[in-house]
Length: 84
Image 1 (cartoon, rainbow, N blue to C red):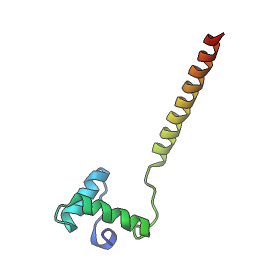
Image 2 (image 1 turned 180 degrees about the horizontal axis):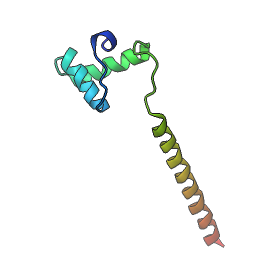
Image 3 (image 1 turned 180 degrees about the vertical axis):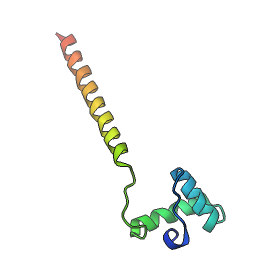
């Protein structure tokens, strides 16, 4: 297990910063190995339960998807009207 007891979870920063920190600390800076190990630990449940997205991010993403669907439906309806 890479994270947990051997690695202090960062309080700020991006996911890239986190992976780079793990790489620097445990894999001699090899970001690919660090990313693969973090993913393995996550899949194995060693990292515990946590969300990969913030609830606000999920809400915003869903809102954008609904808007895109509505726009597509409106364009499709407008196209049907032009056929007559």
